[in-house]
Length: 343
Ligand code: FAD
Ligand code: EPU
Image 1 (spheres, rainbow, N blue to C red):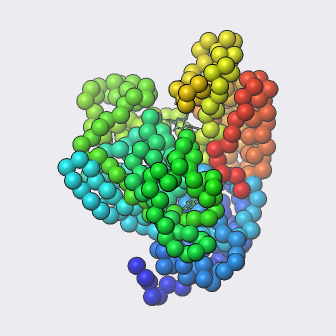
Image 2: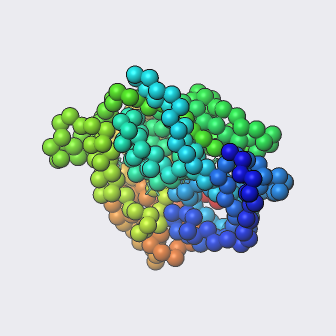
Image 3: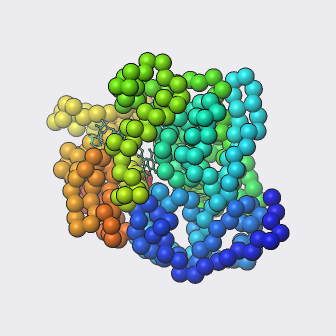
């Protein structure tokens, strides 16, 4: 909706430490917020030709340097029930809504599909970027369409689920269209008849511990929250961006070679002829779990999570990630890929 009184407040030289969950210090040359497509248009008209960086909750970025651009914090709000029938509902959500708030809204209304994705930090707008996933579900399973503002022709374009080209922590927005669009709204298709997915072992055992045999979506959400809180560091206490690396998908022959020396190597099925190995397992086996260097290191409960205990620089965390990458390559012949967006 057009806000006639909107006048973009563009601040200079802004400290980004409060805006990234790694909690590293870096500056934005310029910084502003927008709460609607019209506001975004007005800002862009005044900032023609300037380099831009779109920021959500800052929970999947590592700042290794200052951002010499206009940082645009997406604060488009709103959750709107667009359609409802006996089987499903369509909910259109503003990109600036907090992801977990949206999950809680769905759980409260009995809309099933995102309960396994409870407590993932960040905003709704970033969820299609890297097809967030956890505990047997990926957001692609519930995305109906994505509205994105084309920075070149200044028009909003609608992408169907298929056009988003989702993959494991992948989408067209992270690859071919990187930096070209601002996601403004996401419409989710959720189930009005809960289909509970407890295939991920940890959920089943958590529910069993709680004595729940016929879980509701609220039970699944609560179980996921408890599992996550027991394993993953809370960014409010310890700076981090979740899994720093992706789980590598390797040829069956590579997996067999590793299994010959480590019969207990865990794995997940992947595309035909390939196997996904948990990077956390490889990093732990290589001896990195819990390693601390001054004020940063590898988390003690989850080797896939690099942490800033306070005051570390993005460059130090980057260098640590490079050492781990090299070591895993030497020890296992497996090339890890960073999941976090490095700036
Ligand atoms: P940001 O970090 O702000 O941005 C990420 C990237 O997307 C940047 O390149 C940014 O430019 C771009 N971007 C952001 N918003 C938009 C937009 N509206 N339009 C265009 N581009 C945009 N991820 C998982 O998949 N599963 C997990 O289980 C998980 N667990 C985590 C646990 C912890 C403790 C933490 C800290 C992170 C975890 N993550 C997980 C990673 C992170 O939560 C997700 O990647 C999340 O979607 C990032 O959202 P954000 O709003 O913070 O994005
Ligand atoms: N493991 C170890 N040591 C470790 C960590 C894990 O041996 O230090 C082993 C576990 O024992 C288990 C396997 O690795 O056998 C998998 O561990 P976990 O269930 O913790 O999941 P993950 O593969 O490490 C992935 C996602 C997470 C997501 C969880 C739950 C990636 C890169 N990460 O982690 O997503 O929350 O599964 O589904 O796919 C994120 O993307 O930021 C993220 C946190």
